[in-house]
Length: 196
Image 1 (spheres, helix red, strand yellow):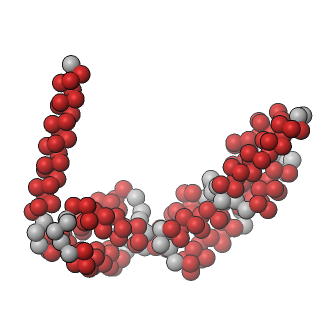
Image 2 (cartoon, rainbow, N blue to C red):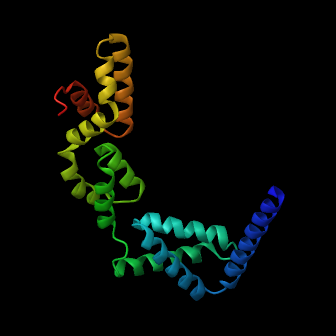
Image 3 (cartoon, helix red, strand yellow):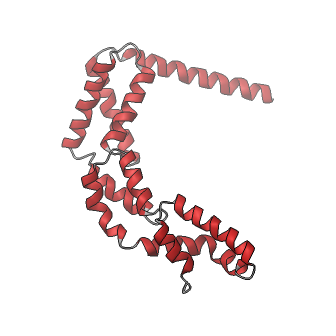
């Protein structure tokens, strides 16, 4: 029974791969490739917001993986055309991407991590500086909320035993620092006593 399931799964996967190969072999002209990338980018943007650099990389990776017969310079030109077209229709917008990214991740990350993530996604420093201002003011509160959620119970238990408390405190500092909070903010939060 198990062997039949494995054979069926393997044959399904093989059939799927063959269909994909046949599809990409039909993309034999620049117009067909451009049309395909336009449709692919629209499908990707339906699922989530992308930065300009992120979507370009995604399309280029697809092309390199599936269209080895085409010139990479030609593919890059096609991707640039698609990206400009998407920007003209306002389907991708780095400023909107930065705002959404900051709003969705700010509750669990500090300012340093938020800035780093946006830089990795190709957002310009000017856009980052415009959008990060409102989050700089409430970094202490965000860090405190995360600290309470993660560590309040263990902090109360280990306060009686100094050795355990110091180990726990070091663990808490490492955790909050890995989330991108500044050390200054972390020490303020750990020393803060009014958790209500």
